[in-house]
Image (tube, rainbow, N blue to C red):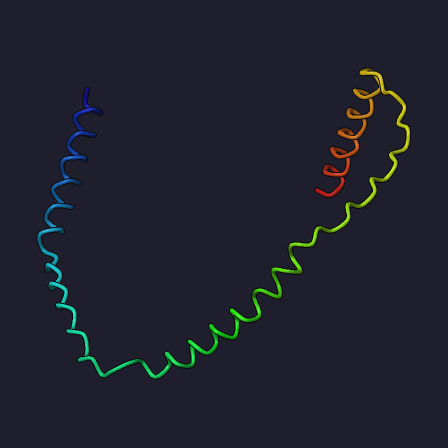
Length: 110
């Protein structure tokens, strides 16, 4: 019972200390209001440059799409070698041996 009382007293003291520190910390100043946008000075001087680049890329784009629409010939699938049918026992042994080899390698490296 004494442990529980001591634990609860510790929690209460910690909470009180945290609250006291929170109250002592000054409140942050409110964020300044955003500045008003600059008066309209006409079109952005970079706009013409960007329009020219856009027109140039639009002229190049159709040529690229024509090339992309031609289907590529399908590659011939490679003939797979005839694999021997592996019994579950053989597969289990192969996997078990591979796991043992990996474990031995780990033990050697440490």
